[in-house]
Image (cartoon, rainbow over all chains, first blue to last red):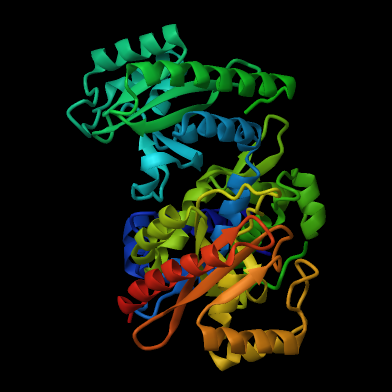
Length: 260
Length: 254
């Protein structure tokens, strides 16, 4: 390697960005797409793509476009499967689903993209028939998991988040800064967050935050069901059970001195 | 852990080395320090450190409080993008969801990647007496989905698998050439593959090939059963579900 370190690092960075250009909504790209989006000369893009293809990181389709190689599925399963939080929460989540018969999720806040990512899902009941959301991403302001995270992220983060345009998903979505802030205040008071028809009409959820030993919010655990099913009486029961689940996961994280 | 020969030269060789570091992270060993990686890959520490920091900046690795490294959750998403790149994924997913809700078993959609069966999606969790391994990649001869695809693969692929030495996932894995060849004949005759504790003890399964209109095998649908043997009536019912779904998917593929 007799290239200057700076130049080689740049090439690595470009190659990694080529990989990142492939997304859940755009999983098939042509060299020209990549060159345009990354603002690279076509010859550079073409050289990077050829190198990534030779190593199996990209795959050439019969139509001459490219997809990510399936080896990324291996990395994905290790990234998720070895996630420490998931290990801590799994048994509790199974218990919770068993008791309530509701779909149960464990999610983290992806600050970089400003969305919530489910890192574990246990589907149950009527929701099992719902189409799967392959990205496992949901909006912060329209879900209980999102609000359970955001409420404990500190004033600065809340200010920054609520200042942006809040997308409307249903008639019930909180798109006003003031209303969302009031909801977050309620989440801090109650220790749990509610989501009622705000992302998908007819679907409601309850979420509780999970904290590490520094009292930093690291995840949220939630239960989701059909709105009519989550009536007031059942919701109270769900909140109570969920609170117990979150407490036990928190106690385990404390016992293990877990820090994110 | 070692580096294979890079296909490019100069800066492109560095790309090869940077991405090769991802292979170090496994279920058995999900966390690495820079010094350990440098030693394992026989790379200078300064180089390793630079590569690791590029992987961190672009979100492929995440640093732990102890300044060690893990695969970042961004890779989960990159994995989904890879699965979705297959033209099979979007087409097959709703059918897999239906199989899952009707039979209640963990349902998988797989494709052949070289000589491996790779699970693009698994619906439902796998909580048996023993938890199902979260692995997505298996030797094709070891799983029901893999065997179903292998039986309908090209002669080149079949010959290659039969010829190569086969490692055992369990004592029941079909590692003997003749036994596997016979099993593949049966699968071609019956149109489905069964598996009894061949990839993991405590687990069995059923797989059917997804055959396109032109007779190409595009993938497999399967179910994973958390017991060594199951009720033949349930198995027969599940097989009907799987076959119907695979036929519907296959008819829509070129």
